[in-house]
Amino acid sequence: MRTVRFNWAVGGGIVWGLLTILMLAPPEARAQTQKVRVAITTFANNSTWSYWGDRLGEAAADELATQLVQTGQFSVIERRQLQDVLAEQDLGQMGVVNPATAAQLGQVLGVQLVLVGSITKFSIDTKSGGIGPFAASYSEAESAVDVRLVNTTTAEIMSVAEGEGEKRFGGAAYKDINFQQSFDAGLAQEALRPAVEQVVERLAAQAGELASLAPPPGMANVVGARDANVYIDRGQNYDIRVGQRFAVHRVVDEITDAYGNVLDRVTERVGTVEVTRVLSQSSVCRIVEGDAQEGDTVQEER
Image (cartoon, rainbow, N blue to C red; front, side):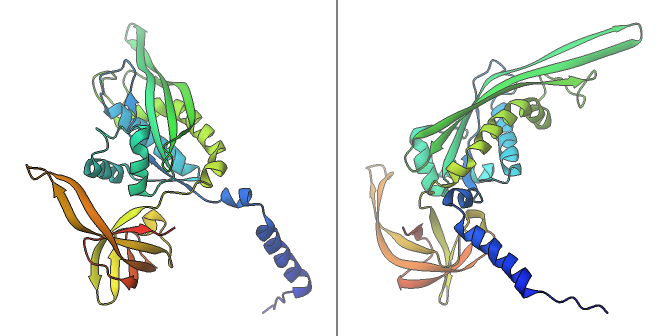
């Protein structure tokens, strides 16, 4: 057996040199390694293509989410989770959010940016022809989209990214469907892909700058307590870290109208908890001071 010895005089110098370079790297370079945490709302369909209704906007949001994640520079909230929050907070219809409500949405989700998009042009034109028994056809899709990046801390539209493109499909039929009447999510996303690719290229170029934005202190819920442990409904899916501290708030009174509708809730801070273990979708905390019980809400301390 051959023994390989490590030359610390040479190898150690190389290791320390690499560590020094990393430690002395400018903040801008280190920021580029951080993922931008975003939520993508369903695109508004402002095109003349009405066959597919809101499903076209959903396809655009899904395609944008897929491409952003593939860059490795963005962390995207799942659309189902976003829709649940929209319904609970009554922030918008069918996932369409404007800049005024984006800041409130960001508080709940703990994201740095909300991407509000619209489809400004979409069409599929099919042409066919043939001689005798031979026939051929092709369909050409045109699309244009624009996305506004809303800072969830200030509700400011930080920038706008636009994209447009064309996609050609060959053959007499694509997946045996009628292009105009039948909706197919895969077809819709493929038709939108060239336009979305341009948008993603522009967003990726800004990722380093966007990563430096501080996400708003997110809110979570205490979902259980046992022995000395408290459990909250956020974990690795929200980038929770061991040692992170949260202020605990409790509803102590409700103000209702004559019909029993809740107008406001009065809350008080009742304690502080610290994360001791992070799981995939939840975290275990210990009580640092005060109290915490199921039904309380927690907000990251700043």
